[in-house]
Image 1: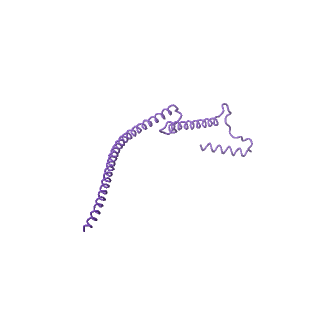
Image 2 (image 1 turned 90 degrees about the vertical axis):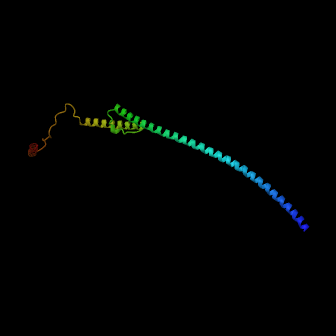
Image 3 (image 1 turned 180 degrees about the vertical axis):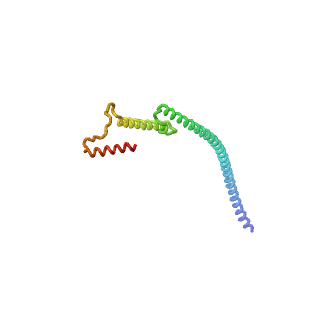
Length: 172
């Protein structure tokens, strides 16, 4: 039995050494894990701080965006009013252009285009009216209008034409 005790004692010493080595290894792993956990906690805290800062910046940006949208709305309203006044001034400067021919628009360029198109239409109408007046004009000093020339008709045809004209005058 003494021999067994020596073997067992040697075996126990060996096991004890292995257990101590495992304990040291586990203690080193635990220390490493604690260090990593501390690093992760610091990173988490930094991320939370960054998130808080980002949320504050977003709220500030949202406020600025709302202010700018309101400002843009006001500018658009003033632009529309200015466009209406510009259109009215253009129409007042050219009374020959009917208001219906210049459509309301928001941009000055659109108003100018509509105004020029209306001026062109007015010019075309004016030219046509002058042409019609010229063609319908009777020259000064022209002879009075006469009835149809009956000299080529026979006597009986002349009598028929005369009776027809007489009956037409009587109906009036």
